[in-house]
Length: 581
Image (cartoon, rainbow, N blue to C red; front, side):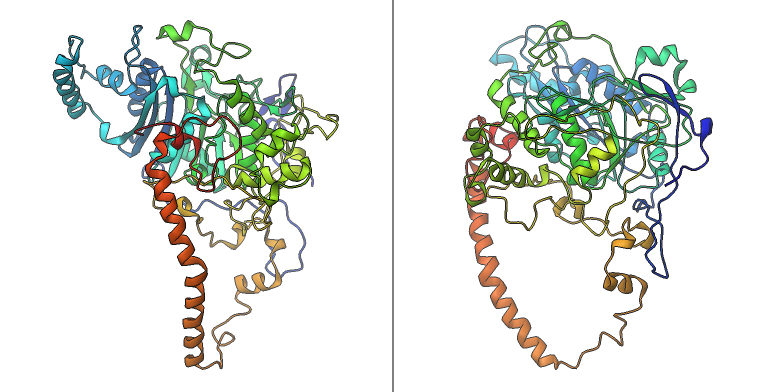
């Protein structure tokens, strides 16, 4: 493959060591001999919406950060070109009785908008008047009808990934989803900018993501008018136990981009994509107590399911570095004191093992741990290798997809994972940050397809999340139709029959006629229906009865202290631990 005309016309990237000209690779084409041969390209956007008509769901988890979160909410709506089309999903982890004042995001937002609660005396006798005052604020505060929230006590917090897993409870039928932190500022007209940037990728499975520029750097660079410099994460390092890591800060930058640039990294502080990104690659509720360790595994999950991450050519959001709560001065647990939620080393170890299993890293996993990771059924029998395979299969939707392979990902990112003897691992030192080439895949494979589907390897499959407010096909196991022939990214991999069907050469109405009598067809249909009911329906009814029993009593379960799932009708950790959400 040869590069197209490039030079500095497409922008430049600083990879942490030097500046490199951006390389835009041409659309790859393979010779298939098919008359209607098409180039291999990403699935084109299926949307007919425009920036002014698209709905955007914005998810914001906050841990005892209500004051900054409130500023984020206010700016989110004030800086949007079409604020009526923005919906917010809040995940609040607070301690409203804390002596140092730990307000909820909604309470502080309403106060900023001029709807503040009055002073009330403490005690049970005054709770009624306090509640009435709160109800008044909720009635008068603007845009609360565009907000959905889940709130639980800060003592039950288990890290940002765990918090984001609750997005499933508040995501509706919005078209686009944006993931941000609680301390975020926005470019003016950010909603139009984000949709326009996403459309520029020409990719239904595009994810715009980068480490947001700080508000101080924004001022230094002259504000939005000079936002041609965009932070870009380049280096991928290999951690002490073999899991690749991204830094929390961008080690590089892109300057003068003419279009979003393909990336091998992503940031949890900002991501913008179609909302099927949230349903096809849901946040893992079992990845508790983690920060950096979960970032590359999540990137691996989305990339192997056909999603591609791009650095936008303009800054859409910014990082708010203001200190508005005493908690921001305190030191938590972790190497740099960055983890301020309650500590649980056993949960963190189990979650860390889960990330290693996802990436097929065997080093450091004992036989006992492998047995606990596998469910204990037939798939977990045998040596440690077969147990880890069963554990990988058990990840299900929280594991790798089938559109691309792990080996392809490592080649794309320019890294190597450690072998069985914990040797050969290699980071990329930021190299290749300016010239990533898009990797084709077979778009006829569903983005929901799991790596081990149909292999019989799983013995205790993790349950898929439920999105009660979302009724689109992606929330119930389906995917969007892609009627464009050019949108099939593996056109040359289609079978002969598929090609003929797509081009209309076969299976025409005449060719599809049958001489089988309708009476025989009807009789066979009746027999098939009877067999189906006896095989599946009755079994599903029994399973549903069991599931209802589990759901109705999940609040009585304690936290999960091992990576092994306890029973066949499992409920995700986030649903077994917390109450009234």
